[in-house]
Length: 548
Image 1 (cartoon, rainbow, N blue to C red):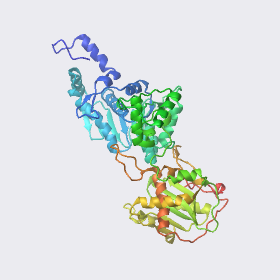
Image 2: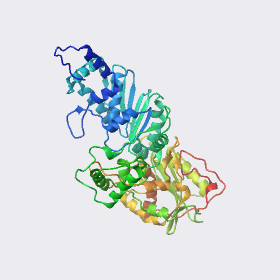
Image 3: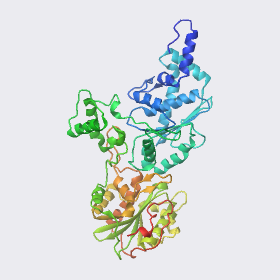
Image 4: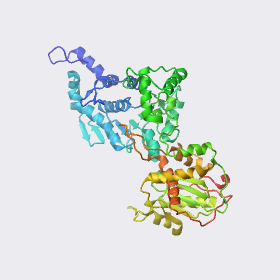
């Protein structure tokens, strides 16, 4: 649409007809009406649809799953689409969910800037249109986390959505949420996603962190299985966009130098028929040297790479060799040697524990528990369940924060465990190690001599049925923090689903290094007793009938 050209300031009948056709078309509005702040600029510019965004707009379904490559602009398109819906559709509720509140509000800020900059659009006719829009449907609320218009529509952003029935729901980075905060991912699936009616639209766009586990993978699998099918309103549609066509992902004048890069793209050409220009292959080569195996999560070339199970920055590389050596298997514990439990304490899904039997040079890891607990009472219930299966336990070892007074109860975790029925003389608090890597290195010394019973390698299921990794799987998945977007390496463990189980194992290593593990009490299996699952702990769910 062009500015009025007859110089009278009045619209002709043809101009009015063109105006009405343009404004009534959502596709036209998204292609012409909005402005954004570019990545490398400080001045708002008209938003231009990238090919991937245009393809997504045309193929969009009621339930959409987008395993994305970085910087393809899917979040920006969805934000502007929701803004457009709020402006032109009365009484519509749109919501954005992200892994952090700040990330969610950043998305809402895109909408806010597009709204505020409208009357300053470089096209005079569009600027005039924006002034009319804002006069007819003014913004009546902006509290940082919610934009609300006079027509009753609103656009909100947070780490979850509760209350009301959203007609549009955008879940960004569901993969990292599911990998790092599985309870939050389950809450989003049970609450926020279920709140959207069948006629509404759900858009999940995410990098595929977490491999083949968790709530995000469960939805990804549903979308993958629906490819080529006749979809109902409740089925998930897969939209995959590779990094290959991004205009910035190339190094002009360069070619790949490594044989492995040439081989990778030759296999892509042979298997998938994908031809990639040499300058893009060169970009991929340099980027993969920086990202390592995270490349498959952050910049997948084909959809099969999205859930590739690779542990980049793996801390306990010994676990890979241990599994290959057949040390994850069924075996009988040593008769007469004591058993101990070792814990990492937290709330919700953060508590984890191991049942361990030191046996001279070897260490037998007999059972494992992790999941949503009921505080110290939940831990005590798991301990009693283990004793019914494995026999008496000689001692229980807690991390240093077990003697910190809880603000809510006014008691320490140790005191609460005693009140839950665990004898005080059986509870030992392991002093804090100044550097986490000291404890990690102590466990590294132990792992080559470890044997893990098969029951510690059984996957869990979340309340919604999504798969979660086993105890052994979480030790394998324990990894360093990825480097920052600026390329800075951080020498710290990643705090996610795997870290709590790894920290519980580290409690054993630190207690052993400090000379705290002492005898007392016999071990041995008790046969014929079933164990009831308590407090959501997965490690205690296998009865003695499976104990060998």
